[in-house]
Each structure stands twice: as C-alpha cells, then as structure tokens.
Image (cartoon, rainbow over all chains, first blue to last red; front, side, top):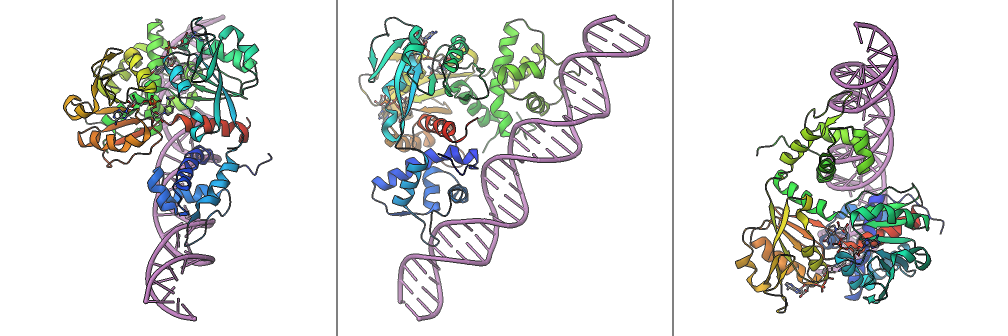
Length: 209
Length: 209
DNA sequence: CTAACTTTGTGAAATCCATCACGTTTTTTG
DNA sequence: CAAAAAACGTGATGGATTTCACAAAGTTAG
Ligand SMILES: NC(=O)c1ccc[n+]([C@@H]2O[C@H](COP(=O)([O-])OP(=O)(O)OC[C@H]3O[C@@H](n4cnc5c(N)ncnc54)[C@H](O)[C@@H]3O)[C@@H](O)[C@H]2O)c1
Ligand SMILES: NC(=O)c1ccc[n+]([C@@H]2O[C@H](COP(=O)([O-])OP(=O)(O)OC[C@H]3O[C@@H](n4cnc5c(N)ncnc54)[C@H](O)[C@@H]3O)[C@@H](O)[C@H]2O)c1
C-alpha cells in the first residue's frame, strides 16, 4: 500500500502496544477511552499518546476521547492485522522451544510456520504445532517467509544469517549475543537478554530513582 | 560509590555490550583496539563509541586507540563485574525454564539464585542448578535479591509485582505483556516479544530500507 | 440553554542523542 | 629525524522525540 509515511519510528514501535490494549478494552465492552486512561494502562505519557495518534489524523473527539471500536478498526487496518506474517525459527533449543510453545497469534498477526535445527533427534518432530526441519534443508523448506527468529548458538549466527539473507529474508529477530552483519536492505532487531539484565543492574546502582 | 553521574542513558545501555566485546578481544590476546574496529564488531558508529567512552574521561591515546587491558579493567570496575547481582525468577514455565538453563554468568555478573512457581510438581526440583520454591514462600525464601525476572502468566503479573516491591526488589525484568505499576523507586524494563515481532513486521512493510 | 467541565490536537520549548568534521597528539615509516 | 598516517576527544550541528501548555471543540449537568 502506498502510505503517507512519516510516522516517527518511536511511534511505530508503540503501535502494537496500543493495539493490544485497545483490543482488551474492546473485549471488555468499553465504548470510549481518553488518552489519560490509556496512559495509565500502557505507561506512556498521555501527551505522547495524543501526539502518536495525531500522526494518523484526528482519531478522537475533543471533550470525549476516542471511540474504542473506531480506534480498534483503525489500528487493525494500520497494523495489517488481517494479513498474517509468516515467520521461521532457527535453533530449537531452550529458547527456541519456548517460543514454539507460545502462541504468538493470541493477539498478534505473526505466526511461526517452520523451525530448523541441526539436531537429528528434533528433525521431523512437531513442537507447538510447528514442524522442525533440518537446517540443511533450509533453502528448500522455508517457503517464502520474510522474517526469521534466530535462537542458535552465537558462533552459528553469522553463517545462518548469510543463508537467510541469500534466501530473501528481510527481517531478523536476533536473540544471540552475536552482532550480525547484513546488507542495508535487511532489518535486524537485537534482543540481548544478558545485556538487558546487566544494564538493569547498572541502572539500579548508578541511577537511583 | 559516589559517582560523577551524567552518563546518558543511551550510553549506559551500550556499556554491557562494549564490555562483552572488549572481554573477547582480551581473551583473544589483542593488545589494542580502535574505535573503528570496535564499531565494526558491535555495529555502533565509531564516533558514538568515542563519545560514549569520553564520558568516563580520556581512556584512549590519539594515533593509537585503546589499550585492551586498560579498557577491560576500566569497564570491569564501572560495571561492577566483581560484584555479582543476585536475581530471582518468578514463573518456571516455557520461558522461565529456558532462562534457568542458560548460564547468564558466562560473561555477566548476574546470577539467578532462586526461582518460584505455583505448580507443586516443580516445587522442590532444581533446574539449571537453581532451586524452585513455592510462590507462597516468596517472602521467606527470596533472601535479599534486588532484581527479579517475571515470566508468569500476565494476569498474575501485577499481584506478584506488588509482593516483590513490598519485599524490597528495586528492579524487574518483565517478560509478560502486562504493563505493571510500581512506585517511582522501582525500575522496570519491559521485554515484550510479541511487540518486538509485530513491530519488526510493521517496519518491514512500511519502512522499506 | 447555559455554565462548567472534559479532552483533544498541536505550536513551541526542552531534551536527548547521533554524527560530522577537524585540531591535536601519537605512532609509524622511510 | 622528518613526513605521513592513524586515531582520539570534542565543539558544533541537526534530527528525533518528549513534554508543556493552551485554545478550541465537544460533553454533561442542571
Ligand atoms: N536460553 C536463554 O535464556 C538465553 C538467554 C540469552 C541469550 N541466549 C542466546 O540464545 C541462543 C540460543 O540459546 P539456547 O539457550 O536456546 O541454546 P541451546 O543450545 O539450548 O539451543 C541452540 C539450538 O540450536 C541448534 N543448532 C546448533 N547449531 C545449529 C545450526 N548450525 N543450525 C541450526 N540449529 C543449530 C542446537 O541443536 C540447539 O537445539 C544462544 O545464542 C544464546 O546465547 C539464550
Ligand atoms: N513463551 C514465550 O515465547 C513468550 C513470548 C512472549 C511473552 N511471553 C510471556 O511470558 C510469560 C510466561 O510465558 P510462558 O510461555 O513461559 O508461560 P507458561 O504458562 O509456560 O509459564 C508460566 C509459569 O508460571 C507459573 N505460575 C502461574 N501462576 C503463578 C503464580 N501466581 N506464581 C508463580 N508462578 C505462577 C505456572 O505454573 C507456569 O509454570 C507470559 O506472560 C507470556 O505471555 C512468553
């Protein structure tokens, strides 16, 4: 879809969060919501919420707030909730298995459709309803997924990444501590759990609240 | 330690990453490193690295770069690597079990020392060397850990959080989709995997690189 | 219908951060 | 030793994001 673009990245990152809470409100039967209420729920300043929403035009009504159903429909369209993004997971170990067992679809338009591992004992099984294939068959069996979750040992990360990129993957969620290299057309989001834990500890010691 | 403070938060978040790579270099026997080399490894602009380091004074030498050992010692002190931060994990399910089996200590000064769950079949067992206690015994058995990892179902998150806070926890790494409320003296880092996946998909569709 | 109240949408200001660009210092080479 | 090269540390700049604060518009109550 040719979009109007110009949504700040910081705003774009909050959209899925907004979507989830608006969906909750809808399921609870709430008809309207103010930026202040939403702020309490998602812990984002109410002015920031109004600013975020304003990039999409005037979604609310002064003195009233936002109509929950209208907002929900808007977000559903904007986040392409009707169109599922198919995802591949590489590395069915501790972390990979947890993800396979988790139903990301609950309030999400993404779905892991295939997993890969080098361990022959896993190949051929199904975990959380997702078939596990051998990493050697990556190119053959990954279909045309455009997003991959990387949960392999860190030494394997770059090699697998190169194959994924070669195969046309354009987004990678990388859980390994390795900082992988990709061409500029590929987007990588790092989630580095050790760093998160360590930086939390650092903040506690050095930034007393 | 009375600090000089004023390290930007963005810099503080990168420190553990720097530490890990500098440690690798040290183990590889490298004696010196430039901001450019470090930049290639951690994928952070070299000017940003120099700026980050400069907040701590002049750590490098012009025309030479940084002495690896000196840098490592500096970071070890700054990140309190010698002092282990003890962590409790609440919710030994898919995700919690993966964390318990992972040895965070590898290049990290944080350690999960106790876990809690409501499931009687788990209580009393040991996973990844960490004993699992009953959630009812939280107050009694958590010792004086100051950081907790939350991997319980989202409906339980707020209740457990209140107990943790009451018990003196000052940092929480929250993996549940719930946005928890805490007093201003407690720091919460949210890691919301669904949001990460969904926002990656959104970026791919709307922000082609 | 009016007055009081609520809440949006947005200029403007404030913050925070990343990057450029270069003077300076040190190393390296010849 | 002199010239060239390397690389730091940082002033300046610009961009992105957050937050303030308020007029305008709508709602609610009496
Ligand atoms: N488990 C955690 O809590 C945790 C925390 C932080 C970071 N990580 C990182 O996440 C990654 C996975 O961690 P884990 O604990 O699940 O490890 P794990 O060892 O349990 O799982 C790794 C899996 O990858 C498979 N594998 C190995 N080489 C492969 C290859 N070439 N192709 C395909 N599959 C291959 C292995 O068979 C195994 O099943 C690691 O990089 C780890 O550093 C994990
Ligand atoms: N697994 C994933 O990949 C994934 C991804 C995104 C988010 N999450 C979130 O992480 C959290 C945990 O996910 P999971 O897949 O590990 O769930 P899970 O159901 O496998 O594990 C939850 C664990 O918490 C325990 N528990 C329940 N109530 C408790 C209580 N009051 N006190 C202590 N323990 C209690 C359960 O016994 C269970 O062992 C959930 O909030 C989930 O939404 C998980």
